[in-house]
Amino acid sequence: MSALYEIRDELIAQRDAYGETLVELIDADPRVVVLDADLANSTKADLVARQRPDRFLQMGIAEQNMMGVAAGMASCGLVLWLSSFAVFLVNRDLDQVRVVVAQPGLNVKIAGSYTGLLTGKTGKTHQDVSDISVMRAMPGMTVLAPADGVETRGLMIAANQLDGPVYLRLTRDPMPVIFGDDDQFEIGQARVLRKGQDISFITTGEQSVRALQAASLLAAENVSAHVLHVPTIKPLDTEAVISAAATGTVITGEDHTVIGGLGSAVAETLSEHRPTRVIRMGINDVFGESAANEDLLEKHCLTPQHMVLAARRALATT
Image (cartoon, rainbow, N blue to C red; front, side):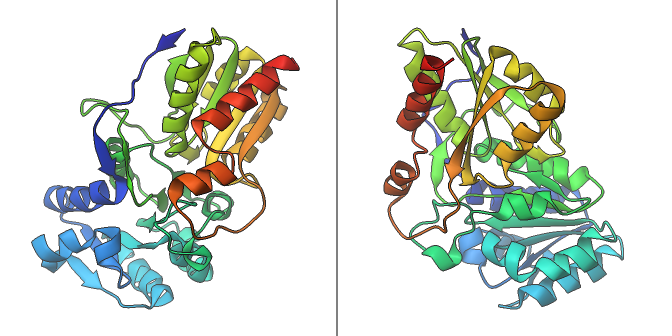
């Protein structure tokens, strides 16, 4: 077995990396403009408001209008970065996303903050656990879910260079870092975090950090776990998924519903190209709820220990 990446001591919140990278993009690209729907202090787009106010527009609590404004500005050659909670950008804005951004293929980057379960006790109304499913089904939409703050920056730089709409899934709280500042990030490319031959974890977002932790725990039991991190859910790195399935059993993991998300994408791909046993770990067709992060991970069986248990059960029945 071979650990290609280790969990570092450093903690970075993806939303902090987002705000800092927006300023960096503005300085590098005169086309970049940031729109925020009255949540800049939460999304951290307020850093742009303070440091580059001429490239920041506060649109108020009017997300559908914000999407229309972004479409108009993008049609003039600008690159728009939209900041709000994912639950609003994906659901409240859905018709506008479909008609005025995705159908014409405009250069609008939709940064959905506060995704998944771990949203700082905001409650079920502000939690979105199906955003990947919705945006993955949207024709022409690129869907990204970084594992840490370093990858957030790298994927944002790549997304800014991509011509067309992008959905970037961001989380709220500080999380461990696994990537180095010298790592290069490419849209459409999955990354092997650990090589193994007994069982494979295919994960996305911050669940990939927990998969690495689970693989380390399994190594102590002489189980060699392969860990594939999928930051680009669409377009999916089909070759990497097929290669990871060589162990014979795949466990997918995501802080998202198991319906239509990464697990579905992996199962669809393997059913067509390499029929393999797939066990999907995620949120089982329920809404989120307000609670502490660790309690929610425990309830929905998304902790590293639950991933270890799933691997043990799978190997026992192979």
